[in-house]
Amino acid sequence: DRPFEPHLGTKLKSLLFENVTPFTAIALKDEIINVIKKHESRVSTIDVNIIDMSDENAYGVTVQFAINNQNPQTVEFIINRLR
Image 1 (cartoon, helix red, strand yellow):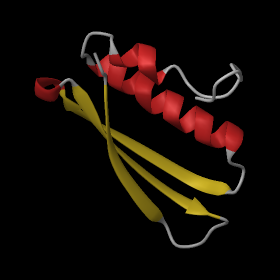
Image 2 (cartoon, helix red, strand yellow; image 1 turned 90 degrees about the vertical axis):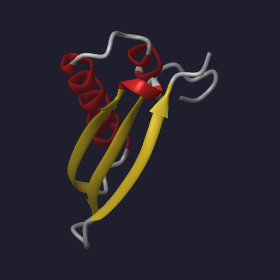
Image 3 (cartoon, rainbow, N blue to C red; image 1 turned 45 degrees about the vertical axis):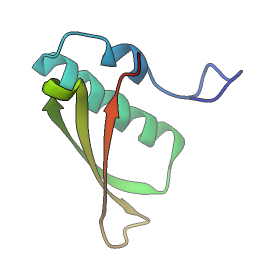
Image 4 (tube, rainbow, N blue to C red; image 1 turned 120 degrees about the vertical axis):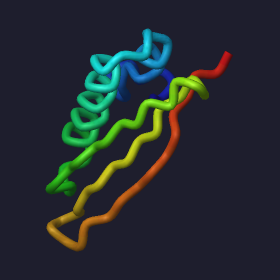
């Protein structure tokens, strides 16, 4: 998200406050894929895996991608809600 530019970013923040269900994980995955496809045209393949970490009020995210058909890369991070 970028301040003062509402058309950029995703609704990940609001999804983090939803109940932990498989549907929420699918929505998170779709949001991440859509924002990458929309704002980064150099990425050719995208695979996103969401891991439920409900005990920690978080999700583990693994994004696999290739830029301009080069070697695939993997990025792992955790998203969680702040109180």
